[in-house]
Length: 324
Image 1 (cartoon, rainbow, N blue to C red):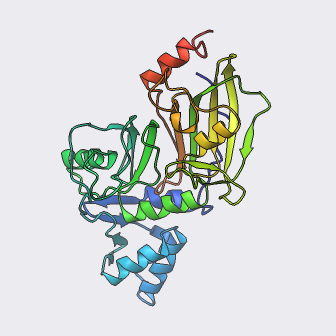
Image 2: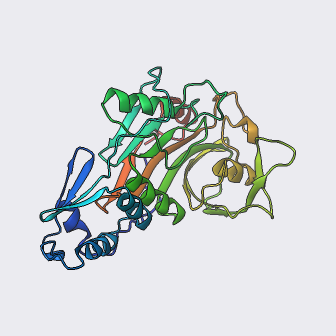
Image 3: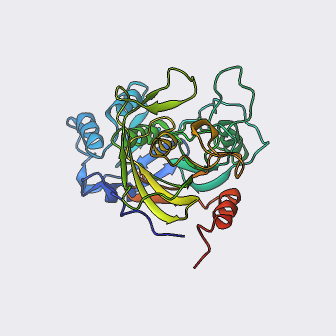
């Protein structure tokens, strides 16, 4: 509907041999075979193991993971190849449930991105929570496709927010994706329908967010809260409502909902933060794009998630799209 807010700030390892060594690799069951070639002479036996470990570290393999693999005998030298047990069979961690089949947006040996529908939590709240969650649906996907992977989400979305959720299929991918989350390298873009005509000058909201002492579920802008930054782009607006695109620099609980409500433009359907609920029975918020550096290839990977029908219909009825 509209172009992205700005260019992605993709990154890579900074190692010129990164792409070539990953091209010279092959998965064999639970093992990954690397062929270092001229970069590492495995025929030279002197300090071969030490040189191999140093070389693996130089190729951006997580040091802690290498240490665990080494302690369990899961790094081997076979001729001119290095074998690492990066894909061990693992329990799902959640009971596979087939009530709501997942919509896969992207998948390979390292990561999975699926669409999260409205009304579904990413994982159970506690052991007494018997609802079908996205974690159960992902476990069913793994089971139905013969994959023995633990269900490991990298980030979350609110229960009534729709959009892509990223999963790491092994410890290697999880370690690198968690690092990207800490370094704010995973780019999450959202679309929201909010009340009122948002000013064109509203481009950034930099307000700390903390817990609301008077309401267990709510968060609020608070001087003593955690730093929170949301970038805003108004796409269309009328006196009654606006379509805005948003980008998160931080990922605080309910961040977009709190920030937009604080600015006087609560999300339509978001009763918890002052939004009217007669037009939509959930907050009108959708994660429409996820961008990250692939943990294996080092290439920027962009995954789009089309708008759900309820938001499309509402935006059209509010004359915020489809007027060209």
